[in-house]
Image 1 (cartoon, rainbow, N blue to C red):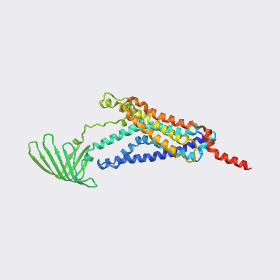
Image 2: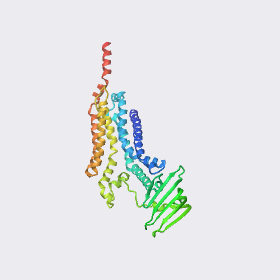
Image 3: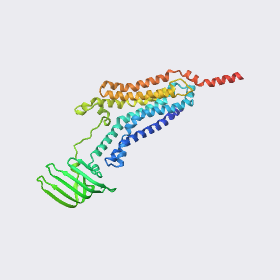
Image 4: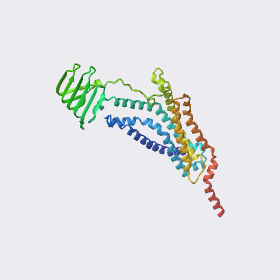
Length: 382
């Protein structure tokens, strides 16, 4: 790569990295706020919270990358243009294609990285996040005790605890368990603690009593210093992990198992997601081309390019929203999947058309006109 190409590439790379980091941080903050319920209501550790938040990063990156590319392209190209570095490139004999090639090369690299994330990294991360959320939702031990509340963590089981101290010791514990035959057992204890005996989760209760009503209506009373209440029967669940379209790999989206009733009913939705995985990276090239169009695609203006940038910015937002609309429409009509590729490709064509529409020579003459006038005036004075 020639020196000038490397220079232009570096000028675009820095703002792209910064814009991506900033937008990703904002998206992660939003994701972390929505996942805060894991700690508050599900009583999970901060490690689980951080894991769920970070596993959402690949999907968030694919959403913010086109926007980051567009913003970074506008910032870098506008600075190069206002400092007349692009004018110098044209005056030095560089073609318009060579001037914009570093920007398109950077957008193409980002497109390949985004495609790799769409095909392999995002579904792997989404599956792991789905597994983590499933474990949290089915973790009876973590939701069994809530201070000052009667909870029903499983059918036929009611639990109450007055307080839980910082060491996990439960005070003034009450458990009511109904039996299938109609009987019931009530446990009360001064203290208790969640633990594991072997591989089984248990609740160890100290200094309490046990009142059991048999099926015949007979009351049995027992006091104890320590009692082990087995939680494993309540941990069993018939629920299975269901992978959403965002959790599936490309071959599972485009070639679903039609013998499964859910996949048969949602075949178009799966197909739309699969084509979106392939088409969405193209928006990185489309929005970079639109940034080039906003700066280089029009004539020189000493009043700045604010109006043109605002117009192209609105068009870029419209193009991306149109892509989401087309994806949603493809869930009902399969032929609309073609438009998922057409929208970014048409946007790229129109943007590059405006870049090459203006002649370079006329562009340079307008940029260098003040210097030519000053030279002519100096010659006339001599």
